[in-house]
Amino acid sequence: MLNQSEADRLIAIQKKRVKEERYNFPLAGERLVIPIISTDEREPFLIDINRRRIKLTKCTYQNRYQGTIILVRLDVDGSPHPNPEVVNVPLTYLEPYNGQTILCPHLHLYVEGFDDKWAIPSPSGKFSRTKNIRATLDDFFYYCNVTEIPEVQGGLF
Image 1: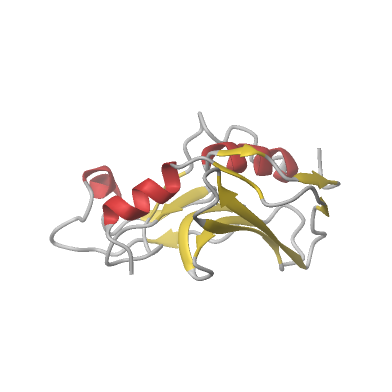
Image 2: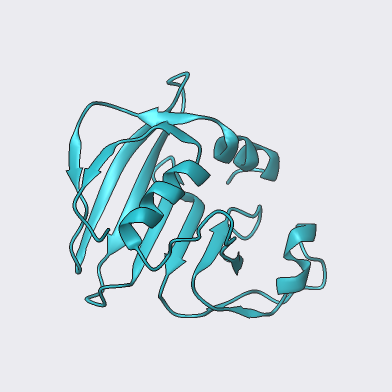
């Protein structure tokens, strides 16, 4: 488990593609995992594009660390997410969302002690193109500080 400052650091550091490789944006019912790495090449990450459901507009993007720790997850056109209801909200920006159900698109950020159990509405200034799941991938790379973006072809434009 990560402490909050370490998770925030990992989210904020610049990242790049691991190698020059071309990926195909997954079709409905498929999933793609893209390895990325911090620009100092010390911290490996994975970017997931999950379209396992047949619904064409549904997609989940994740930035994972150490294979299993979800640092950032964006859910587009999926189910509403019920947040925990707690007496002491772990981070002040989560206070308005305590015990609330958050509609899609929504964003999960790592919260110490809760992993990815909290969601907030997707920041429209960061993810303004969620009707286009391929364009949203570029926004997700940018949000996750991927400065050398892997080449992903196909998908909806």
